[in-house]
Image (cartoon, rainbow, N blue to C red; front, side, top):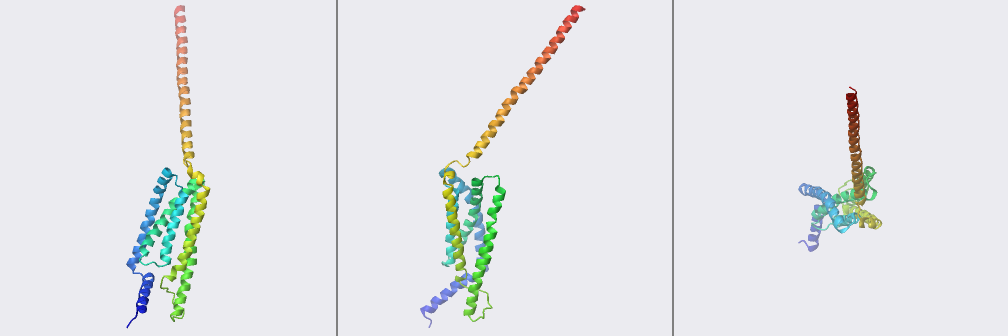
Length: 258
């Protein structure tokens, strides 16, 4: 007869097998969830942060901090293999990954202005490929290979099998990713502190002043041109009158002489 320990072992093995060897349909679902919520995060973060900033003076760097902390929840769900959490983790991670980009680029434009925005935009974008290479290839890939080698040696496979099964395959990797995300949230909090006075005021005042100054200058120039043009027309009319007057006088003189 099979004991309770055997049943627990079977359930644990089934859970590990479900994490490592998911059906293709489930994998496609997770990828779709991440992509859809990535788009939703990009769209939502822009106008929601704008509403909070305009109505409540809620700084955009603080919203970026909250997004990063929310992403940590998704990473930890995967790291500890919480049952039935992959769907929720996919939604959270996809949404947060999409939401951070419009927030980041909006912060760059507001804090540094638009003069060098194209250069700063590319500096912000380069974080994605660098982070992906370091965390995906150098960290996650390396730790996965180490865990796969341990399982292969323990199972008597001679270390040739590079397949890893179980939550532990990516546990350390996601913990490192979580720590990196927390570090980013701390840096974002530092930015919140340093820009607190800036976001309490009207951050669009300089754009409004420039627009008002340009409009006022254009109006002043238009007003300055009108009298000159009118004066010119009046002067030309007076010249015509004088000329015509002289012509009339000359005609009168000529007539008298005649």
